[in-house]
Amino acid sequence: MIGTSLALALAPLGLRIAVVEAVERSASEQPSFDDRSTALSRSTQRMFEAMGLWPEIVAAATPVASIHISDRGRFGFSHIAADEQGVEALGYVVINRVLGSVLQRTLRDVADVDVICPARIIDVEIEPDQANARVELENGEKLALHCSLLVAADGANSSVRGELGIAAQTARYEQRAVIGNLLPEKPVANRAFERFTEQGPLAILPLADERAAFVWTVSEDEAERVLALKDAEFLKELQEQFGYRLGLLSKVGKRVAYPLQLSKALQLTAERSVLIGNAAHGLHPVAAQGFNLGMRDVAALCDCIADAQNAGSDFDPGDAQLLERYADWRRADQKKLVGFTDGLVKLFGSSRRPLRALRNLGMLGFDLIPGVRSLFAKHTMGLAGRLPRLSRGMPLK
Ligand SMILES: Cc1cc2nc3c(=O)[nH]c(=O)nc-3n(C[C@H](O)[C@H](O)[C@H](O)COP(=O)(O)OP(=O)(O)OC[C@H]3O[C@@H](n4cnc5c(N)ncnc54)[C@H](O)[C@@H]3O)c2cc1C
Image (cartoon, rainbow, N blue to C red; front, side):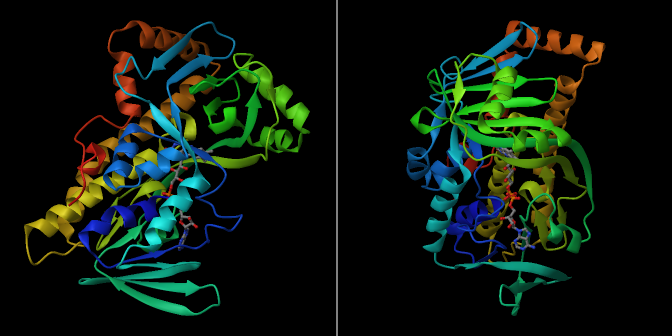
């Protein structure tokens, strides 16, 4: 999702780009453009607007008019509404496969971009004036690619990151996110729900045709058990966790579980190379921010490259100062989001008394202290801090 988006975002600069992707989009095991639904933030929306892709994406997406946040077994809840924040939607929900078809179809028509797929980067060698990547095609044939800048966008278990000698800190949450979709009895009416339960957070997101997507976080052992349940039993347990705000839940579709971990690369760049998206930071999906954070990496990298190209004839997209500017720009946002999502999981996942008291106070403060909700909404919409051109909805060129 992030690598393809970067190639599309850079298209106006006329650079020669190769995208190497291991798994074809149509393959059932495609790990990025799969059956999950992604909540796109306002800043991601602006980026796709600036890239001219928004009309096609919005036609397949469902707007989120409000978010209802609650803690199972407690009375307190909070509510954020788009109209209160002065925006037409807090975000848009799109199925990854659908987003993938828009992005990849568009990419095929961009001159100067070669898509090499299915193919895998198997090793990397960096020289002072170029990065070299060895690529293995499906039939075993090998290709050698030489470039000024190598971008690793190969996900949380990035092998390219390892090839570059960049270490990552990882911590397993010992939880899995069980995803799928279902049909609630009452209209979802563009509402998203985030419910914190003893096991972990449970999100319900609005989809087209009155269906809803769910992301249910459960412990590793529980995941095996709930995946094996018959549909009716699964719905009964989900209903118990979620309650009856949407009436009876029915018609659950295919369920898939994702292991959850926090990962942080210890460096964002190395000589002639940069990490973006999950290769740089893999988050818990509790706040639906991973893809959106990766898109802000894309926007900032595009800005740094466009500025360097505008500055003069000795333009080099892999220049060390350009990469340093990029890393300086992105560090704070990434650190904040990693801390925020990890903190939410720990705060709401704990049954320890002091933390429970803190979270009750937190929920209260969230609703009662003026400005706290707006600040939270601004951060989750991706509109805080210094924004690159694309995140402001401005074309690169
Ligand atoms: C259950 C769940 C729900 C989520 N919901 C949201 C949400 O609502 N909003 C949000 O913003 N984020 C969400 N996220 C996070 C989001 O899915 C990720 O942040 C996003 O997928 C990261 O994209 P990426 O392109 O960096 O990595 P990935 O999606 O992991 O893609 C990596 C790609 O690299 C390819 N690859 C790997 N190795 C190689 C190699 N050696 N050579 C070539 N190609 C290779 C893979 O085939 C894959 O296509 C969610 C995550 C989960 C698990």
